[in-house]
Image (cartoon, rainbow, N blue to C red; front, side, top):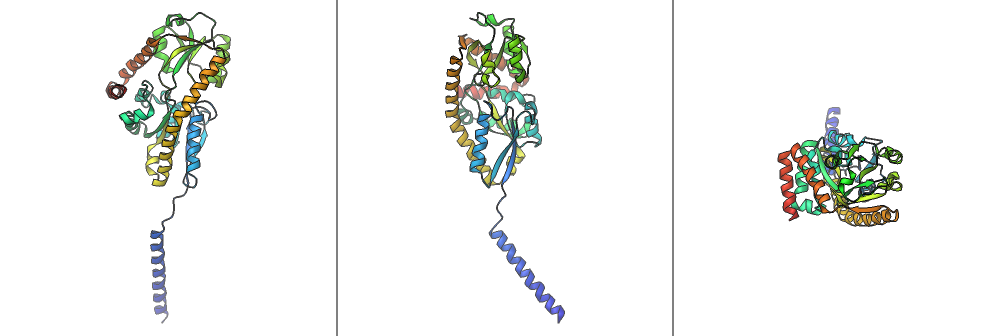
Amino acid sequence: MPSLHRRTAFACLATVLAGVGLLALAHPAQSEEMTLKAALFVPPTTTYGIPFKRFVDRVNETGKGVLQIRIVGGPEAVPADAQAQAVKTGVLDMSATPTAYYKSLMVEGDAQVLNDLSLADQRKSGLYGMLNEIANQKMNANYLTSFGIGVHFHFYVTKDMQVTKPEDLKGLRFRGQPNYAAMFRHYGIAGVNIAPPEVYTALERGTVQGYGWPLWGIEDFGWDKLTKIRIDPGFYNVTVTVLMNKPKYDSLPAAQKKVLDDAVVWFEQDDLRYTGQKTKDTLAYQEKASIKVVNFGPQWQKTAVELSWEDLTKLSPDSIGKLRAVIDKAAK
């Protein structure tokens, strides 16, 4: 009799467990909220940190209970030139970083800097998809979105001098980065690599007499107080890419991917408004700061772009040729 009771009890337990299993299938557990780790190449409160912070805020607002992004910091947390590698290895899930900072991993990224297509046109033409595929292969990363497009680079002079043509810059020392190297060589400017926090002192002491920097942000470090001249027209396009570790993105459940994808759509539409207003405000600010504008004419811009295309083509002739063909076709 005891064995019969045990068999009956086991049978009842099996029935209960089977019922629980069916209930679990009928009501699967919802995914827990996930938090992604992100970094960016500048502090989040600076000019080029703010757009990424706006994207993160949008994700965190619309993704409550589903997906969140935590900014672990700027270059003080992860060096700017190491962030793409950290995304590649999965140490970071995401990073907002300019193409110049991952050129050693993916030289093709600079093709985005050398065209004037809007981000929408880059997507429509297939350019953005091509860059994303290259990033998949070379950096184990997705191109999630980009910002800064439409903001150009300029040369600024801090020395009181007569400047009317490019030849007047010959022999000057400018603070710069590798993306200005071709222009520096062509016009006989000596490039000096100085970390941004140390540039003010170098300008003040006359160690350098100018610098290359985009239109936005010279006030972040106080350089506006020492700047006498901005040279127009601007050249290149500021391009900050939001990279995401590809395996991480692929592993996200559909609901979490949707939060990210929807935030990208919102961000790219709203960033057009933000960029336009920020540019307008910056031009007004620099005029008020009595920064004189000297226009070198359209050849200045054309020369900058062509010199960089030449350098890129030498580094990766096949892929750069294909990317440029898409750009040229879309620009017609």
